[in-house]
Length: 442
Image (cartoon, rainbow, N blue to C red; front, top):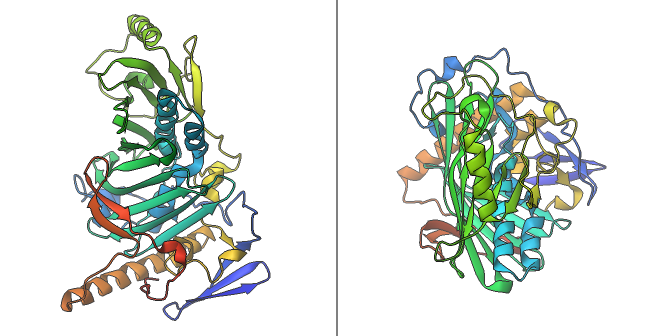
C-alpha cells in the first residue's frame, strides 16, 4: 500500500484495487467542517424487502445495502466517545471523589449523545481493521482494532497525552430486528482509569432502538440501567435511561443517584442524554419527583406510541439548586445534510498530510467503500463493499483449510483487571509505527 502526496490531495493505490482513490487532504492542524458530498436520499429504497425475512435475527450476519450506511466504520463511531473528553480532565482537576463521579457519569452519558438522530448504520469493520486518532487540542490519542468477526468485537484504548488517564474497552454490538424497529445491545465493558487518584471506573452502555424502520419518521431511544462503579471508593452512580413512555413524556430522560459504598444517596443525577445532565441534592430530587408524579396522567401499562413523539416544549425542567455538569455540543447548521453528524464526527475520516506513510494500511480512513460513499459515489461504494466482504470471506475460508490462525495485533483477550469480566486489553506497540507484517484487508 502506498501514499502519494500531490499538493492538497492524496492518492491511495493498492494492487488489489481496480481503481485509484482520491482523498481530500488537510494541512496539519486544520479540521474540516463538512463532508465532501451530502448524504443520499433513502426515500426510494424499501428496507422491508430486505428485512422481512430477518425478524428476530441478529443483523450482524445480514448484508445490508450501502444506502443504509453512513460513511464511517463502527471503529470510528466508537471514537465519538471522546468528543467530551474535557469531562475526564475536569474529573482529574477535583480532589473530591463525588465530584469526580459526577464528571465520569456525565462522560458515560455524553458517550451515547452522538447517536441522537443518527439513523445511518456504520460500516461493519473488517477483521484486522484499525483506526487511530490523535487530538492534541483535546489531549488524547486513541487506537482501536476489530479483533473478532463472528461475533463482531471492537476493542479500543485511549490515553491522555499527559498520561493523566486511560480509557479502554471492547464492544460487541448485538443488533436484532423486531418488525418495526432495530434494537442494538452494546455488550462489553468500558473502563476509565485515573492514575492521579489510583481510581478505576467501569460501566456498560444502555441499549439503543431505532423505531419506524418500515414506515414513518425514524426516531431513536436509549433505555436501560447504567451503573458507573468506582472500584477504589466503592461509590457508584446508578442511572436509568428511560424508555419513551406515553406521548413521549419520558423520551431521552436519564436519572439516578450517586451512592457511597453503603448505598447511602449522596446526590441525584438527572437530564436528557440528548441535551444535558444536572446534579442536585437527593432529598430535593425525591421531593420534586414525588410532586411530578402527582401531576402526571401517564399510567403504566400503556402502549408505546408508533409515531415519533414530539419533544417536550420545556426540554429539561431544572430543579432549583441544581448544578449543570454537562451540556451537549450543538450540532453544526449543516448537520442534516451530512448524516446528522456532529462537528467531531465530520472530522473522523479526514486525512492530514502528516499521516502519509505513517498510519497503517488497515486504518478505516483508507477503506475504499467508505471513501467512495463520503465522496458521493454510491455505486462505487456498493461495489467496493461487496468486494471487501467477499475478500474477507475468502481469507477466512483459506485459513480454515490451513493450520494458520488469525492473530490480533494490538489487543489480547483477558479478564478486566478491575471486575474480572471478559475483555480485550491493549498489548502495547501500536505507536511504535512498525506495520510491516499487517494483513492486506482492502
